[in-house]
Image (cartoon, one colour):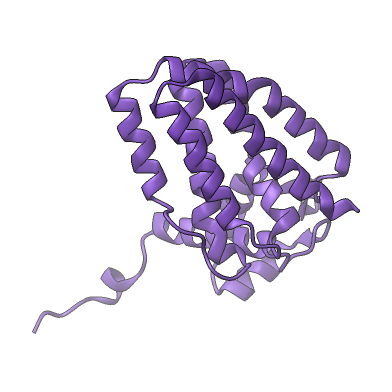
Amino acid sequence: MTEFSPIALRPSRQVLAVDVYERIRALIMNHGIEPGARANIDELARELDVSGTPVREALARLESEGLVSRLPLRGYRVTELLTRKELADIYGLRLLLEPPSAAAAAEAMTPVFAALLAAELATCPSAPTGSTYEGYKALTAHDARLHELILRVAGNIEIEQAFVRTHCHLHFFRLSYNQPFGEQTIAEHRAVVEALVTGRAADARDAMTHHLETARDRLMRRFL
């Protein structure tokens, strides 16, 4: 029988850091830590049964995503949800950038790009069940990757990087985490990809516009 030392059974520092980051992120996304509330390092370390070091590393990473902000000499707090104006402004930017980028991507389409788009669609073939971040994490990540891929195919790295820096998919989910939206999103993605891979620039632009406007209007209803 093979014997395992206690040291060998311990998770590596890197694995632990990723696990703590994912667990704190899930707390924030599911409002386990309310928007605007303080993210206390010592309390989180006790709750997760870890030292303060991976908690600090996770919070620093979450700060880069705009999910927490640093308080001078007082640690971190969870950022507030997007306001109606902030939501409208982000979608205003996306509608300026993404529909013409979808048209450009359709014009630049190759068999290799088409295969990449099909492979990305296959990562999330059906809507998740439930309404928690755990259930929707895969769809949220797929949504971000697909939009980034389309911008990459379009060939404008500045637009792609600007989009990535918004981390908009995380902030949008925080507004709608208890309102399932998977089936509609997946259907819209398929329509966008179909137009892209067949090289129909005008249809790709229209499909992306429809997708963004539908998603925006769905989130806007939260403010009614």
